[in-house]
Image 1 (cartoon, rainbow, N blue to C red):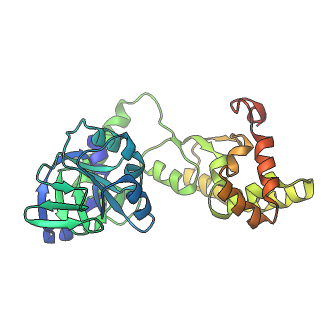
Image 2 (image 1 turned 90 degrees about the vertical axis):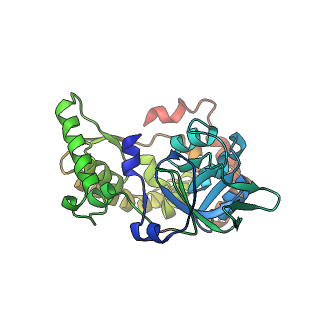
Image 3 (image 1 turned 180 degrees about the vertical axis):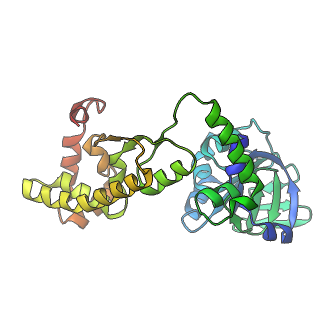
Length: 313
């Protein structure tokens, strides 16, 4: 948990000094987050499509999970560091402040009152889950100093006390460990980040993850829906440059370190949409009938997806 704290985002120092501190709660999920106030899960999910949100509740329950996933951070007036909000936030790596008893949260008026000020849903608040502080307005955040040194390369390691301490701890670990630690990584950037943090290689590179991004999923679906070898090979030719570029980047980032590469694993129906609206969009995009998309999904569905075609990879 202490390592999580030093790796979490932080507020820009100048912005925090100029900000209005409202009150303090219990630090329940390390890091810094700013966002628009949203007081229920549904509105948080919708608002998150437009920008960062904070889910603000008297206390959370399992029905708030969708909103917690969508939010940058979670703020509650009740509960402690073992409350539902705190446990779920830490599990998901979300910034969280709990038990801020000075907050008067009114669901009917969709407002938060604190120390004589009123903030309505849609207004910005900022929370520091590392020390529990709550601020008015939107505060600029920055990656932790360790991230700035290792990943962003924007900070001189000699100027960061946090990085020096982190580096010393990692040196002690390296001397004491009797095993290597490898990473799960599916892209060059993920590999580079893992190597920067000391990974000795890739434990698992899941090639199917390479096919879910942007235009790649369209080509993958075109291949699956093709009803002849010519069209199937045509779709695969679109995928080849993407995968080749990914592996070139991965091997370059590894600099000779080992990698375990898993060939296509999921059943093919997992690459196709299952709700009718998405199926209709896919049919239109590929110039095929909705009925043909539905039939292909049904044909590919396996009774036990742990076996079947995935065992042939």
